[in-house]
Structure formats: C-alpha cells, structure tokens
Image (cartoon, rainbow, N blue to C red; front, side):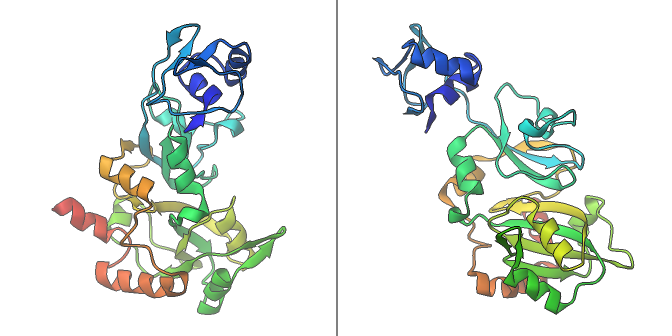
Length: 283
C-alpha cells in the first residue's frame, strides 16, 4: 500500500505536489468514489484509480540489484551535481534505493519502486542482515572487534555491529571483482549488522582508530552481490523477491550472540566470502 499522491506521481500524472492539488480538487476517484484526503492508502495493482475520469496505468513493480561504483550517490535528493546510481539502470519506472550506500561506498544496492518491500528491507524489525567487506587501516585485534560488537556511543546513538571478523585471505569471487589483498598496514574485515545507521561502519571503525579505506556491501538478507561486475545490474528473481517479502534468510539468520561462531563455521565450510555463490553457479 502507498499514499495516493505517491501512486499518481509514480504513474507520471504530475509532480507529487501537483498530484496533491488534484486530490484536494476532488478530481481523483478510487474504486468509483471521490477521494479528497491526502495520505489515503491505495493498492496500485488492485484499486481502480481515475483522474478526471481516466484510469491510470498501474506502475509495474521493479526490483533491481545494482553493483554501485564508488563516486555514485544512491539518494536522488542529495545529487548536487554528482552522478546517481539510479542512472546506471535504464528503466521507465521511478526507482529508489532500499538501503542507501554513501558516495564513497560500493557494492550491492537494491533499487525498487515497491514501498512495502523497501520498508521490510530497511526496517530493523525485519532483521535483514547487511554484510560488508571493510578495508581498514592498521591491524585490529580481538579486543577491538569485541568493542565493535559491544557498541560505541556516537552523537547520542549507540552504534554496534552484530559480528566482525578478520579476513586473512580473499577468495576467488573477491579476486574476480578485483578486490586486492590487504597490504601491510591494512586489514580486511567482514562486518554484519541489521540496522545500518548512516555511515555507521565508518564511524565505528574510526572510533577504534582503524579508519575505513574501502567499504563494499556484499549481501542484504538473502541477496548476494556475487560476481556481478561493478556498474552492472540484474533483475531479482521471483524467488528472491518472495524471500525478501517473507523475511526469509534461512542460511544466515542466527541469534546475535552466536553470530561470530556462525561466521567462523561458514568460513571453514565455504573457504571464504562468495564460495557459496560459486557452487550455486556451477550447478
């Protein structure tokens, strides 16, 4: 369900503000009844919505997985002359990011026009994990990783990760993405969290004296970046959309207190990040 003025705007009727004026002018009908109240919730796929007697075209729901390059903005409202990630995807639908990446971060970006699904992906209540590879300065020890999991106060917010693990060697999938091994004085970390506040990983790592040099998102819930080249995109499968809507992430979901043990087990079982995807592709 979405607000009526949003549905009208996405259908190309007019700008959001102009659509609000159309509603207030009693020129919009939903299922035969005039609607003059802003914020009315409608289902664009089921409800019959008319403007001046003409039925609008229901917007097709789109679900795109993009490998966002560094230097691209994921939020259209913050463009300010910088290139937009959404411009890498040629489509008629108006898409927006479900879970932003800052301009200097890269990796998996989910683009959609499905507000309900975007809410499920981004709201911490639905427990969709976000997994990152972070190249940091220095060599964090186990005590530092424990501090990241315990949490650090930053500008009134308690920031913390669900799990953090040192990645000694990148796997074949990472090398296919041209992600190089850490050099002397650097360390790759694999970090998992489910909330994802703005620049959370950068703030956390900076607070423990290990600033982030590179940040790549490799997974959101059941979705994995896999071998998708930088700047390229693909549509989600029906199965993937269904898993996001249902909150399914069977292979990854585990209580936070056991999350680090699960990461260790997965590394032993798969040989590192991305190996599970390789086996799937080989079948």
